[in-house]
Image (tube, rainbow over all chains, first blue to last red; front, side, top):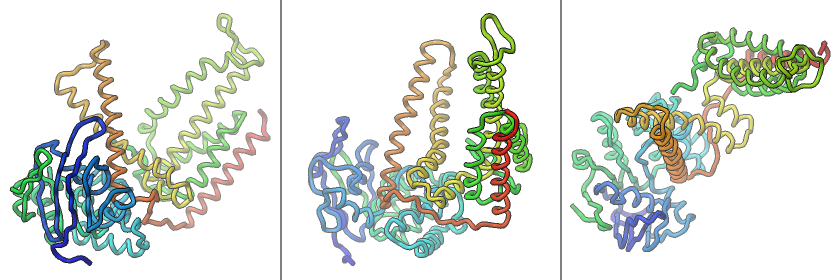
Length: 221
Length: 252
């Protein structure tokens, strides 16, 4: 186990352009320490989601260093470990929930991590309890409401017990009660996380620090 | 978009183990499809109709679907009677319809309807989710099950996107007509859907990678065989054999 204050994510001099030519980052620096709860804002198209995808190894940078949990990550196999320990919650829950039922979607990650069927079932039950999703286990994922989908999407990632959460617009379009449930879960079980959002009210309650991404620079607000 | 219209119900067929359904459905359908004469398919059609009645499926819901199937079949009636060699029955202009051709077209009509009704009565009465589960239990390759299930899972998402694009067109007073503007707009609509589906598929794949996917289709629920399942399975095999026997040995 790593200590408080140890660097989780350390990005230096990152450069990235999309294949169709749009330049997103040039010389970007960003670092996140264990225990930090950070909000990330910035104009649409500033590259917030792209940054998350680079951290997870879903996109490969053109230049620079990505160091996660103290190790440089370059190739696909370096990122396998990152994906086990960092949990990314996608912006659109329909992208995240692809299994027939809620319990299968939640169990998908743990089973991929090599947990047994019984362990997975326990994890599903616990995760559902923590998020107030009891009784949802057998429901069909795509018939859930927007808010329920978002909570289940968080559950699917939380079930893998990540050391750090990356949340991409987690509460956009959610009502107050659901936002509250989301927040309570994060406060109680999330130790280190980065949240992309434009919701300042939510940020005030959820994070200690707010950064703004602008022209390849991350500015503290 | 409602894709499981027939899956809601509480008949005997709705409660059957989907694994048994697949195991009996496949031989039944193949037997009917590979027949030559008309007696076998006719028996099959009667049995499929009985199953539909048994499943409590209303005729009104079926009707529009039957029309679609039989539109295709109708095209066969235009060509087949006149293009098969055999004993002449009547002729229009210089085209001669033969007895063999008419029987052939009749046989295909009976088969198509028998298979279609059986599909609705047997497979349609289970949810797609449980069908996907049954396929995994029957050791169908994970890739195929994913393909089958994802098709179902995302066709409604796609339909949703189609609807929102259509609404976007409608609120700007788009009215389809027979002109270049309409064709171009529909072209954009389809193109947009293709691009969006491609991008969504990429995002889903990424989301799966983030959770350590290795291509396995994990399942949590398990089926248990009941007496009724065995009874149904057994009767279906007997019926399938009977139909085959009728087709093989009675008059052709």
